[in-house]
Every structure is written in C-alpha cells, then in structure tokens.
Image (cartoon, rainbow, N blue to C red):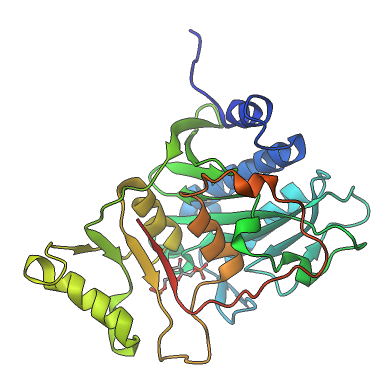
Length: 320
Ligand code: FBP
C-alpha cells in the first residue's frame, strides 16, 4: 500500500525545490537536527530502563544542577551536527562557551544554538520536556567564528523550532514561511507531517505563568494577571484558565495548538537578572516559530562582522 504521508525529508526538499525557501545546506542541517531529536526522544522515552535518569552531579553555566539527560541530549546534538559540514559552531544552554566545529571537519556557514532539554525540572517525573533550536548564518567578512557572531537579533534566524517529548514526539519548525508540525512514527522511525501553515489562534482563554512568584512581580504583570483572574466580571469581560507545565516547550506548544499567553517575567527575586529564560535559545526560537510568515527575512543578506545586537530582555512573553 502506497504511504501518501509526507515525511520531514520530503517537506524540506519541497521547501527547497518548489518554494525556494531554503538552500540545500540548511535543509541537510535541519534533517540532522531532527535525527538528533529522534535519538534524544528514544533516550527520554526509556526513562528508568535507560540508566539516564537522575542528576549528573554537575552544574551548567547558569548554576543549575545538570541532569544526566541534559548532558546526553547535549552530546547527541553535538556529535550529530559537528561532522556534516553545515556548521561553523554551536552554542548550548549546557555549555560554558561556543563549540567551534573541529578543523578535522569541513566548516559550514551556519551557527546552531540549542537548549538540549528544556523543562529539566520535569525530567524525573515523566512530564513533557523538549529540545529547542535556532539557526543563524555566520557573519561574513572575518575569518573564524567568535561568540559575538551568535549575538544576532531574533529576526536574523533562518530557521527555528523545537521537539516535544511527550505522549507523542512532535517536531515543530519554521524556515520562514509559517510553522509546520511533524509527529514521530516510531515504527518507521521518521517524522511525518501532521500540520502545515500553523498559526496560533487570535483569541485566548488561557494564560501560563508561575503564579507562586506573584508577590515578586512588577505592577503591570500583577495587574494583567489580576484582570484575567477577575474573569467575566472583570475589565476583560471573560473567564480565563491557567496552565503551567513548567516546561516552556510544552506550554508554548499548547499555545501554538489552541492559543494562550506564556509569561516568565522579570521579578524582584533577582532584580539584577533580566529574567529566567534565555533569549538566544529559548525566547527567540520559541517566539518566532508560529509567526514566521514574512518574506522579508529570507531576502536579508548574511550579517557582516560586528552586526551584533543586545541579547538581554526584561520580560519573556509569547502570546496568541
Ligand atoms: P530549562 O529547564 O531549560 O532550564 O528552562 C527553564 C524552564 O524549565 C522552562 O522550561 C520553564 O518554563 C521554567 O524554567 C519553569 O520555571 P519554574 O520552575 O520557575 O516554574
């Protein structure tokens, strides 16, 4: 029986050949990232049977205790992507500095940033977690690759996405023309297209924020949530529900699927810190996936050396 389902490979080939959205090098890079996510999905799915649960006994650059799976996921992405010739370097939530592709491999023109396993606090309790990734072009005009090459504004991303490891393994990505969702067919071992031209619904009845931090919030955030909690009798004239999975990748996937607002605002607990979530491999890729419809970005020339922009943000908020 002919399988008319569209695989990730076929979808990307059509994005390249039919729509001219992506060059072949980027297509091949995205296929390698997807393969790495598939391997991470198998490791996560094994749970206690895979000797990958629990703490790794080490801290990452943010001072967070690393889980064994954080390190496994990080190494899986590095090993899968370093030899293909698509990348110049990588940056990860689990690594202190950038990882420059070793000279024994061909140097590519792209930069890959990732949060290997987002929602780490949920790893040991069988709640959905995921991998988040963002792709930039390496600035032209200077040899080698430097930290500053990664510091580009979010609208310079040439591709972005995430993979949720939950009841299903779902890969969501954009190459600049709307988002597409793929579900992992475990029997076949391939990602199959399940939703295309994904757009988030305009309206919402749900907000996602860690309410236990309310006493530390700034007044505008407090007022917005108070208005939602006031429900139909309040200024917004409708009832809202609250959801908080504490895995941003899963909260944002829900919002992409049925609308909502996700917030992890700055708060007074650490006033010097701009917020908990990282701009380059959490906020930028998750903020871009649903809305990447504009054609302008594809025409943008590769950035030149020194075109870095600031990366600090005060409040992370993604909404319908
Ligand atoms: P990491 O797990 O990658 O460190 O990400 C941060 C995160 O887990 C987000 O996924 C989630 O939204 C948030 O922290 C949960 O924070 P809190 O535990 O304060 O609710």
